[in-house]
Image 1: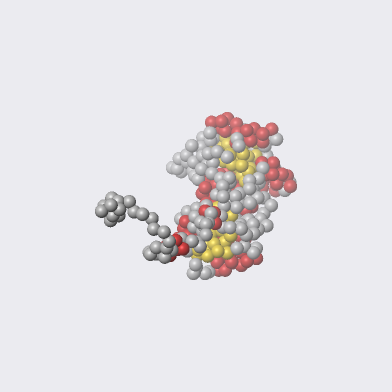
Image 2: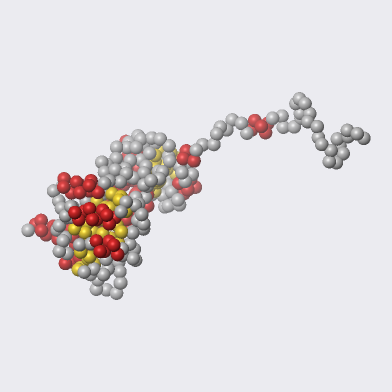
Length: 319
């Protein structure tokens, strides 16, 4: 029959007025939720910034975080506690729901409260995601991007302490654990700062903060575009360049320039100093080894060299 819409393949005619069905329930269910929050406002998202809040006073030598990116997370009870003790600028403290408290957790909360730092609660899954599956122990501190110092600031710090400058520069060191350990050694043996090139070297990340603990808040770090250009500039200011390499001309026990203004350049893991950096060094030194090991970890070698330089300087100071 003409107009019979029940025939297979016949077009359906739209009906006017209300129709039976969901009664608009489905449509209303999609309303009222509001726009999807931005990634940086959603806890658990890798771009989560922790929202607003107080940055804290922070040490005069710069804020702490990841250069050239968004906020970063310091994870773990000891690392977070050290960061708060050092008054590291932070935007938020995040703690796991129903966290098992101890003395560290109590002090973390006390320090956060004293700084009026916002405290958020998150699930273990959210914390795992926020910290990139780090061992967070139920605690994470959101920190803003690191504010690097200038090389002149490092020299000025030495001048204010009436000491010959002692700096550490990294040439291709990419492991954050090595940088963190070098910062601790620099702090222990009186170095006035660390220099990092922008390329092919690790920056100040949360992983570095965790290894360095409080040393990252006490030792200023400068970042430069070109390491060898910076070394040349330092040499023009009578700062001697000591290259640390397994195949050195002298050992750390025979340093001729240890008492002078100096920058100790630590080479990459396994590769050592680059050719240009080695050529640019006033003296290439190595750590004496009598055992069977062929080489040392970059941070271990740096610690030994800084210890030797510190010993020479202390002996001269007592003389």
